Image (tube, rainbow, N blue to C red; front, side, top):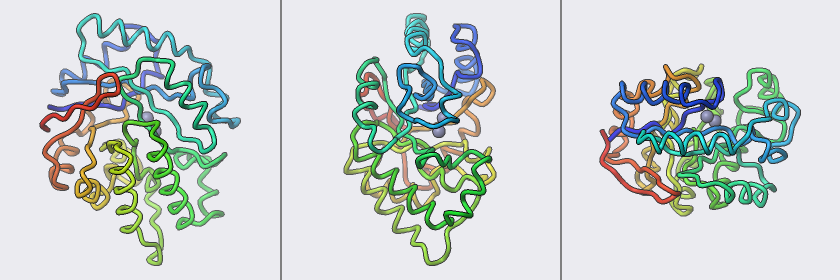
Amino acid sequence: MLIDYHTHLENGPYTMEWLQRFVDQARAAGIAEIGFTEHGHRFVAAQGIVDNDIVRGWGGQDVEAYVRLVADAKKEGWPVKLGLEMDYVPGKEKEIASFLGSYPWDYVIGSVHWDGDFALDLPVHKPEWERRGVDNVYRRYFELVRQAAKTGLFDVMGHADLVKIYGYRPSSAFDLEQEYRVTAQAFAVAGVAVEVSTAGLRRPVGEIYPAARFLAACHECGVPITLASDAHHPEDVGFAIQSAVAWVRNCGYGDLVTFTGRRPHRAPLG
Ligand SMILES: [Zn+2]
Ligand SMILES: [Zn+2]
């Protein structure tokens, strides 16, 4: 089967009409299940978990309305999942757990976008890369991703090498292979899946997340995968999904994992 387990409704209203455009595009792309994964920080109920001026400006949505909308789509018999993309913020584990425990998610993606007030993927923060140094940004990023997996709060690790987004590469002194191996092992120990996302193809790096050598290390450790587009508009649902399928097959994968009520289920790929 094919799935798209990372999509955002945030650029439209929480209505069946808007959601149906995503479902229609999924069907047209041969996708059997589409998961909606709104950003946790958009919801009033999760305010204060990511606590900086930029994110505060993005908030204000009603999580109850989102949960109800996806439940209504399920009642229609549409092949949808209630997901969430939750930022990992060290020190906020209790607050995250409390928010996650309040709603009937099918699965929760754990993502690292922020290190304090520094956003890896916001172009406005590009100068900060130079100040910190690329090697240090990489080192800190993978530390946070492993720490996120170990919390046990998440089912799937989102775009797990987002740090390559701009194509900045660490120096030859930096052992990226070692980061991949240790991180893949941490995923296996934590029992999380890793997301294979075509969003990286739409970013300056022009490469699927995670890198082939990272994904191969995940496969060796027995870490299951989901497939994802990170679509923020209906037309991006299932974006380049056949490239993702080829990418994961090359890394040894023949199956993927789906989730219902946070319970994983393996299914054959393709
Ligand atoms: Zn993300
Ligand atoms: Zn996302």
